[in-house]
Amino acid sequence: MDNKSIVNRYYDAWIHHAGDMSGVPLAGDFVFTGPVASFTTAEGYRAMARQAGAAVRGFRVRHQFAAGDLVCSVIDWEMSMLPGTLTAAEILQVRDGEIVRGELIYDAQDLRQAMARPPAVALLETACRSTADMLGSIGGNGWAAPSGCARWTVRQAGNHLVGGLLLLGRIARREPIDPAEVDAQRTADTDHLGTDPVASFQRAAARAAETFSDPVVLEQRFDIPAPGTTGLQLATISTLEVLVHGWDIASGAEVPYKPDDTVVTAVGEYAMTAIGDASRGGPFGPVVPVGPDADPFTALLGHLGRRG
Image (cartoon, rainbow, N blue to C red):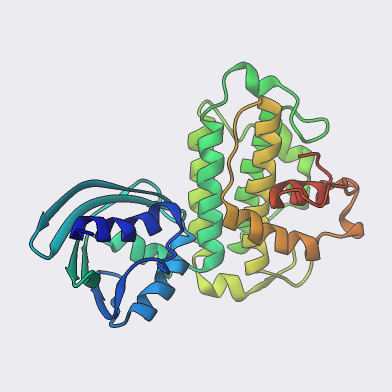
């Protein structure tokens, strides 16, 4: 097997196996250097790759060059916590059929910043990107269609979503709140979307992420929506709102919606414990039974009274 074929087993692990390097011939003393992390053993690198692979949403080798025992590849990849595409050059050295050394070269400033954010904020940003993509696909007639929220059109559900994000951020910043502002129907009937719904949503999402990026905010307690609510709970509720109302909007407008798996898992874990019978009758209807083979998002929607 030539050196490029060995290296391409390494890239196949990123492309098709979510970073699982168990079938890749890495030398036991494999040395890897990169702008975010470095490793001196194959075991350490494999553990990192499995963890990072769960966040990789796309990966491709754009160009590849071989010279002696070195293979240089130009690669593009996408990660759930970042918008856009990352591009890097990677040099892998092969000796006696094993990859013995790797060096990854790229500007990692955006990735370092994303990794430094509290996990709750990273989830919120990921959820917002999926919902923003979906909002951009809605045509003129779609906004007037009935949404997945009873009694609301798609536009009203969008108004409620943006208004709710703004309100939760204001609570976290301890800005004065009129109790009437908490009314869901009021947020639905207030024009928060304006003439550019996507831009309006993105501004609200960015403001929310900025607010909840402060670890002090996440640790504080607030009296709304209930006494003792933590900032972390407010951030999680924000993510739940973005995810579930995103589905309400998409199902009404009949446009594709593909939320991130990590967001669905995290929101599902929160909702299953935080939303019970006492929460029914308002934004959440009676549980809709789902089959044992239902995917996690369908199960979450059913728990929240929606038919996925």
